[in-house]
Image (cartoon, rainbow, N blue to C red; front, side, top):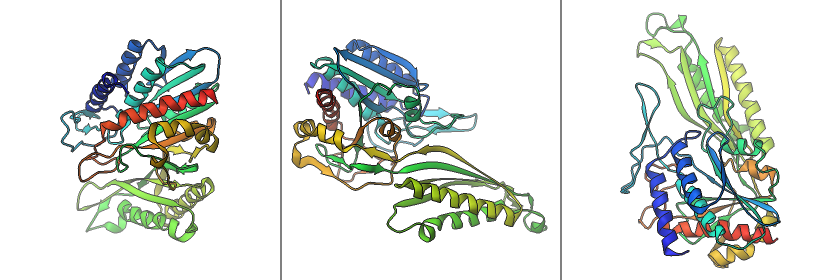
Length: 396
């Protein structure tokens, strides 16, 4: 990659990083993407999947491949020492300002896809490349239909004529210049759940027997649900249930009448995933009866497992070797992380790669950490992976 383009991409990345936006609110990020596409002379459509942007580069007759990057950030307060670190806060209501951060590297992904667009604009090929700048990968937040950006992209019909799709994710513990992948089931089925327990308020000392203690009930649910994996799921089936948020109670002398629990379920196998959800429902129903309370559960997203296609990877072989070198391409085991690129992988043959982005500091932090830093030297690798991958797939 030429130095001029690299410097331009670094500037773009830093601008996006300093101005993070959560899912379905990526308005300024989309504006920046469109401005860069205008400069490249690549036509695009806006407001796909609410705040998404899809650009299309056509050069003669041939197949169509899709390249995807996600744009959204996380509600995390950044604690890095970067000069361009985020100070942005989202005003949720009159009392709450929520800090925002690109702690999952989506600023890097968006930048890399713009870099790939610049490289492909100057390349010779026959066919069509779609550049998908996708909103809302991390969470569905206030979306009434509880659909992620990836699900909406697929439902929009934009992949109907696509023969293959490529995506990537920066990996802050993997050295720059390395590439990791897993064929077949690579990432887990996932959901976020919210359990709302409604009991009855009472005086905590004088008349606790007149109340229905939502905090006590929540403790039973947490213990029972957390035991599902160890007692009902075979040890060889990778599965995780995590409770990550609890809110309830108003005073130390009042029995709490309401508690809200939130968390996530992950499993590689879809039948195992569904088995966990069914067992959760049974536990909640039994608890509801035992304590004579109201319990409501809702799921804020449901991602299928991500499937990497061995034929797409095989076709990509020469391109990967050119960009990284054979010795730097590493097969790895599946992990219980999730990605809504899974929706793409269920629609068209796809590959999703992990790109080395380890910072030069002695200590590196992982994704979703307030101190995570991504090495900008990986940007050319990401852009060239997407560019050369698209060119190779179009030929094949």
